Image 1 (cartoon, rainbow, N blue to C red):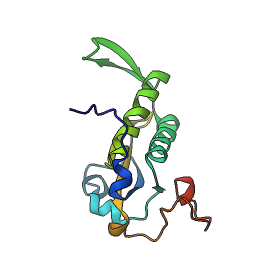
Image 2: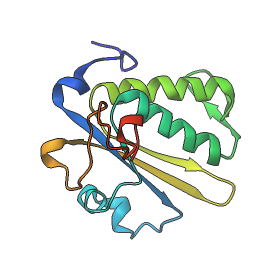
Image 3: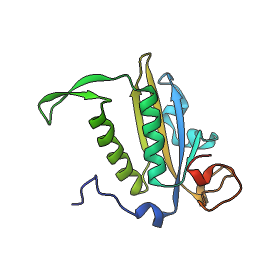
Image 4: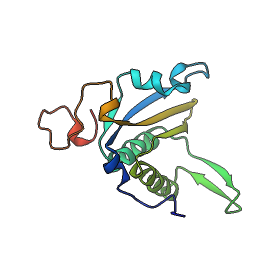
Amino acid sequence: MVSPMVISDAWHWTGVHWHGYVIARADSACPLLRCRSARLARVPDAVLVDPVAVADWIEQHTRAHLYPRQTWAPADQRWVRCGDAEDLARSRRMHLAIASRGDSLYLDIPTATGVLFLFVEAVTDEHCLHPHTTDPTDEEGDGASAGTA
């Protein structure tokens, strides 16, 4: 079995890009929390063109909003600090590996006032509902070549 932390090029061959959505403090009845199609119908907060852009976007939001705390890690049999340099580096590697397979990522980030939800939806150009480019060589200045739009 392949380790879940292995970086792959599968994303490239499946022809995906990702739509990033940020949802703050929504109640559980919010359709954006429950339904992928509801999120995909909305204009994305970011268009991410490769796994590095996905990992960068998640890390940016995590660093900006995470409320550091300690939590028990049963596998390690010790308390670990969420949000320290070791945790952020481990999380980044995991997000990069998941995105490199062409998969979507869903995160809830505890903040000082509640929870910030990040949804990073893998989408093929064929199934994309919004006009934007995922071509990193695009010179239109729409921001997609930098990883976000």
